[in-house]
Image (tube, rainbow over all chains, first blue to last red; front, side):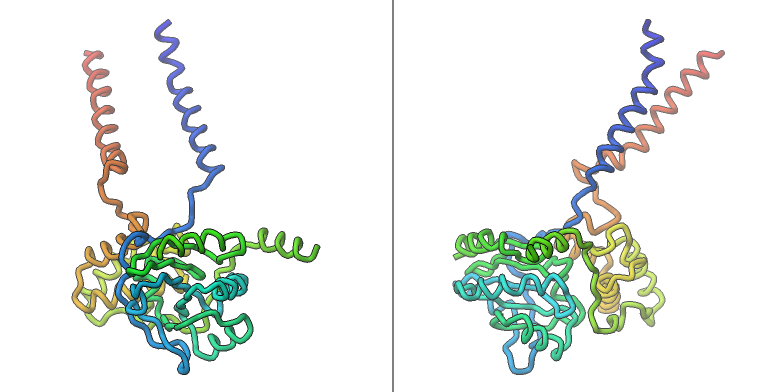
Length: 176
Length: 134
């Protein structure tokens, strides 16, 4: 009897292996890479202005007692167009939005803002994605809620769509 | 109706990995003049995971961000930084995930221990078999 049972062990192992493989293949792991800097101080950075006539954004803009949204975007990024009206709406509600344009040229940034609206206070130009990496961001668009003490409170990966607005506003209120 | 269609199309659309209009960073695909530094940088590039093409290392990936990561690694090595310090800087931001050489933690130790355990178990079974035959 015991020998019979022992014979079934390899088959059982195979069944377990097949089961695990099927389970993992049918639900691939999360591919969104979140920044590990949530809850940590905004890293120091400074950037040249993306547009000559506009102020830039540096880490010194944050931590003045006012929560801010730091939006990472690019003129060549398609989801950023979808996000633009929501950012305008947030601005109308009094949200201070700073921006970083990744790998962008001034003429492209100004054309993008002309077409899609301009909700930004300052816009920095991150030509080699260096500041994007400093923030632990892995794509465009992404947004960070930074509280009045300069601590990153929340990261939103991907475009902020109308259904995300409540979360963003709640995080900004928590960050007062 | 149009809105619904647009939303549906958006939901079905595959993410487009759009590229910028800027050329690759200077050091993305250019070797460092110092051969030893270049060897250090290349070794690290093969162990850092691309954030865009997630199965690839930044050495293998054609994504722009991977190029910028190669440039970051080369410039920091050229500035005298140790490869492990650069790896730590990236892990601090993106988690252990970004490194193909995961550290030993309570979660990952079976990964390192399994080969040894399996080898010992196999050895023990084989030893018993051989002894039984005598």
